Image (cartoon, rainbow, N blue to C red; front, top):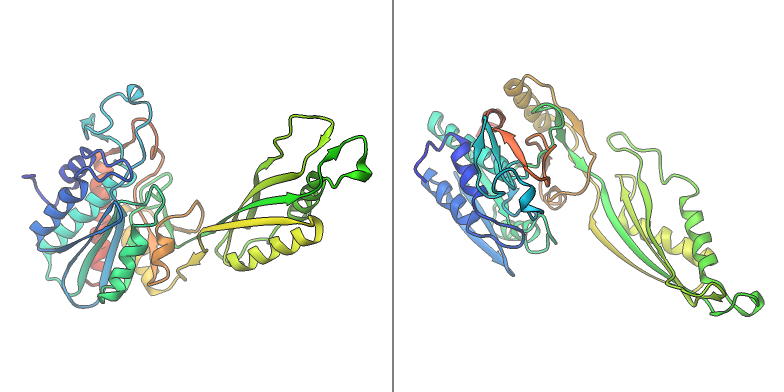
Length: 377
């Protein structure tokens, strides 16, 4: 790729041209590794299972600022509905189109270009690194979490990490995420005794038991929110019996719940509360829980202030600090170091004709360059 390394557009186009629909890499990380090595980064390729990841670093001292992102993308969907090829990376009327343009190959290209600008214009005082995974849009098992384990073992944990998720909502720079809610799913089976509906004294209706338990769970809000988080939310996503007979009480009833919880809770405490409620109302039951992430918060302070001020200076927009939305790989990073998220406007991510104005892509690179300066690297 013979192009100006300080311009994010050519790299973004080259990355989009790789159809890296998760878990496939399709050469995307080769493209990025070649680019970073040309700037002087030491690139370590890290394959876990079938997932390609990389860690790249330039410099050995502090402060150490890491950029985290992912080269995998969601499927293109109905390709006939795209106005061009989903993986062409073409520019039309000043707009870059393609799967990953926003989420988040454009963000990766912007940071890489910002690093190129920084290295060309200033003496490197600290370290710049990139943690790039190919397993963010899928199970997130063999990606960021395992790279972080490798980083800790090898003394590569940064002083601060910036995740390039598309956090901006209306204008570039209007939102920085400094935390996320946790997410827990509970699959519940309540057992009863099957029998004829006309003889209720001979049956034990599990539907009634499960309904009473769920009614108790949703009778009152989990909380009213906290200083930086909106109220936690419990949503019943399924309630299944699978009973085709209207005159038969079934032997079991099942439900699935999803809880998005703030920093007033932990998944273990919520698990205990669910089990206690089921024990009170449901009788015989089984419950399996899975947790995709705990809630986390990077408490505002000098580092968050430096990030916010740098973005405001570059974009002319003062960012709002936010913790909304779903989960991201920042949930893994928060276990090791302070982390925040900032990137492009996310209005077209995962959509047909995903797109970003080229001017916005270049403005993001300038903002990331300002962050590098603000952190003194």
